[in-house]
Length: 212
Image 1 (cartoon, rainbow, N blue to C red):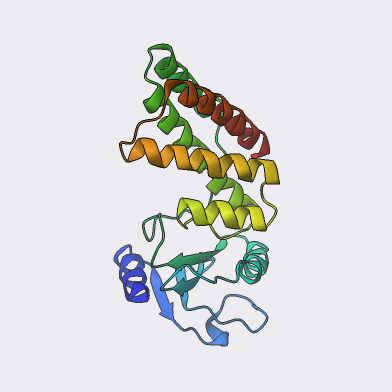
Image 2 (cartoon, rainbow, N blue to C red):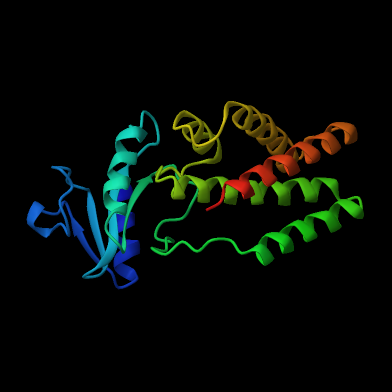
């Protein structure tokens, strides 16, 4: 069971984990919502956790409203955890530091070096990883609790919640398909790959501009 794994992971880190907490145990009013788990880092910090075995038919709009409610209270975050997540359990930080300009420049310099020496596949994959980081961070900042989901689900939900534009969505989907071909060893023509790198560079720049 996913819930058992989540409880074990947080408990092993020394956090207090309350399964199906009573209303009186909640740190603040959640308008009648009772989470699956209350994870307390301290008396004033922790996670309100919803756990689902699968990632299908998720009411993301409802979870987003919960996330907004929780975010009004310093030190607390709403988490959606599913059995199909891309992100390992219990690797969240309550404080989510903004990417610094130096970190962004360092990543872009490494990618530019790969391109300059002809390592186009490696450059594309590095760029895609950066794009995913930026999309997941953007989802968190928009209080859309989808940043743990698999890439394709995350992109679709981000678009449905108006976190990215239609044009950004279309490019992200197309570029993700190229990422999958490269990652699984299928050939991509050089001219197509060079064009994809250029599109991905533009998309990454747009995502950087969206960071708060």
